[in-house]
Length: 283
Ligand SMILES: C[S@@+](CC[C@H](N)C(=O)[O-])C[C@H]1O[C@@H](n2cnc3c(N)ncnc32)[C@H](O)[C@@H]1O
Image (cartoon, rainbow, N blue to C red; front, side, top):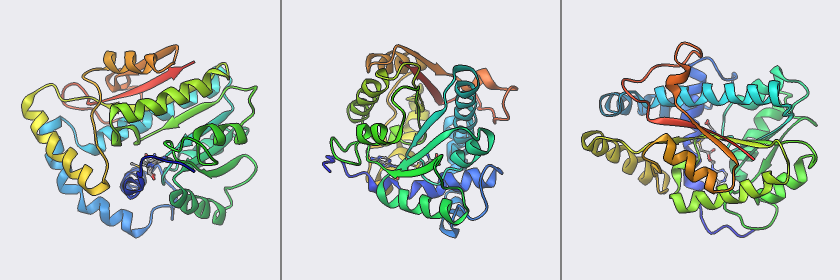
């Protein structure tokens, strides 16, 4: 395996997001270890800071993205005939379990860096969730060859004659735009060989005011130091995100504003324009 970027320092953040899903009744008993609960409590003061500087707590944005991603996946399965889903950077997300319950015919592969993939597979195995239709595979989105590479995982795990839906949640903002764009280009190239395929993700927007920017910069640097990653907000607005992802090779891209789902999905509302956009990209 050849991976030019070591992003293993990011993995512990899955404990935090996993704890958020659990606190909001979206997870499975036993999926989140006590360390995840402790991290949730530890980071609670940051939530107050974020609410003041960014118009909503981090948990607001996490829940907005999680519910809208779920909704877009459900639409793709129910209305566009998608029966294969790959969730990259699955962490301790309960989404795979929920989707398999909702859609028993679904081919669900969860993937993450090797250590996280092993941890997730162990949990799913002890609960009897693993099987022919629900598997976990190690992946590294920056591995340019070998069994951990994106191309190898997709080729080995999925029927090439049927559309594939790829999801990443909570991954892209840990990398520079140049680095994550390499992943988007490779993903678009693989999915383009499978008509009807799609990619769903989210992106956090650069703050529009200097005051908010200053506050968020502090949060960004703290998260970057903890994860040894280059935490980045890549775009100024949804249109910029849409155009950039389209240039990576996707034919149709929408940058969904959570406001469009207020009152339609059980998501919390931000004060002002939400910082997050959900990317719905199709080949
Ligand atoms: C913030 S967590 C998100 C987990 C989950 N998607 C969620 O929303 O709860 C980020 C995840 O990205 C994974 N990750 C980091 N670098 C990666 C890489 N190069 N390839 C694949 N996954 C990676 C981490 O191991 C971690 O599980």
